[in-house]
Length: 560
Image (cartoon, rainbow, N blue to C red; front, side):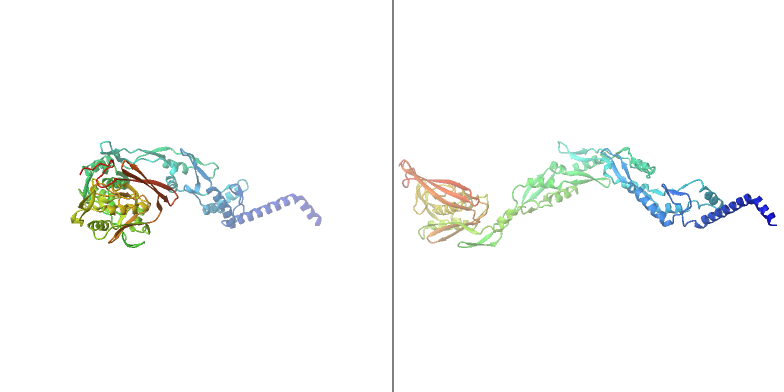
């Protein structure tokens, strides 16, 4: 029996091995097919690739990590946009592209698991011979791309010039034509982007150039110019400080502009230019200044009430006020308001804060109780408190005016034609000499002065001044950097003029020279002024004294 069996198996051993092999293969295939069916959605099927990487058997998380890296790489790539001035580089995620990571991961996990039983079996069998490539899920949003491109200033090559209005040589408003601009064709660029394969390494698009017309037409500008010419015909009348001036139509029109706002042509105004035109009509102050008032006690001075400078034309809103009225078809005349000058230094000068030092004082004596003393003291009362600003001129004749009985002056001796003669206001030359010397030592300049023709011993020899109406006059100029307060005081036997300021100059008499001019005496007096910056100035004053009352330099009688 054993021999029979042994023979039997020996005859059939190749078939047995073949059968066993087939059985094992079928078992393995059945297990692989079963594994494929049960693994659907949890891991990637066999022979599946993603951008060159095999995903066989990877879990969802493993695939997701790989896809995220790929998305970051793709979305950071640049696409170049050509322009006339050079290329503009943008990341693809700025021009509407996005990478759908979840969809791509789902695509990888679903590979070879899609369709019915037969389809999946066929796909499974294909793993033996073919590799399945996972499709990347990339989206493009044309509206997002358009928004980015429209915001690029480089794609507007030349801006359109909107039409406007301008004054011609005749002072009439006419049309300033609009000019079309040029830009990239955004629609064409979006179309080019939509067909780009952003997974490639080189990305670029080239736009076409299109014309960009103005928002409004020249005909609209012509209608506006006609309307404005009619509104400004004849100009307008302006009134400031009681003075009426005419602002002509050209002055208004050359400051009218046209601006395009939300697709509509509207009128705008060059307010600074119009303000300048209005102020030029009223160049002088249109309101009086008020000097500060002071209290003086010897060398000490204090401000009682600050002053303020003259008002000028015009308040800052004047141009807007006039323009709005004209454009609203108002006819005028229009009142122009004054304003304080925009000058901080001038404001300081008028607040009295620079009057801190007694910079000079001078006294001359006289006999008591004469008529001439009444006139001297009356002159002192009028001049007391005069406030002389830097650069200003003080004329004694102009400020006091004619000496009349109505002003409180009385008859007294005065020099006329080299003789002492009684007249109303006589004797006030002593006040002129006193203020002359106070100004001399305050370092002020003299625009006009004249010494007496006869020397009086109560005055400094060669350093004095006379005054009469209408001439000679005593005219002083403040050439210092600060205002000067002129203050007068008197006793029954003397007159004093003091000057107060911020001291910045020292003045002293340094020489006196006298010589004969026939029978007259010619005197020269030198003054040295030393300023706070160390600079020095010497000026010379002259006097010519006759030999006696009524006698000229040749010894002859002066005709009466």
